[in-house]
Image 1: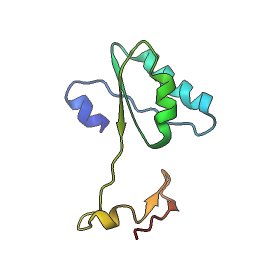
Image 2: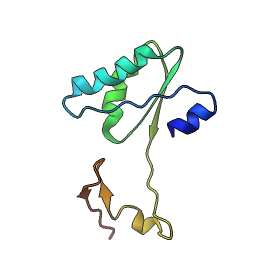
Image 3: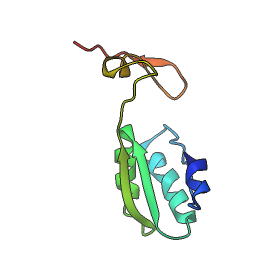
Length: 99
């Protein structure tokens, strides 16, 4: 996604959540916001809403965007979209069951 944004002439920065504490999770995007030259749009997904709500008061932040979606694999449908959910390392942590 960053490459696509940069191809349109936008500056884009990805921030890794350190997964250590809320304070450190907030500090990471705050530091990134401080390095931005001009208005900054923060985009997040999942539980990062807590983090971005804290960072959203930074003077450079002009907007907050929450991305929440489920997409099925090729050839799959809505039923298969949530069957196997993996964490960032690829380990299956959740298995949703549709009834």
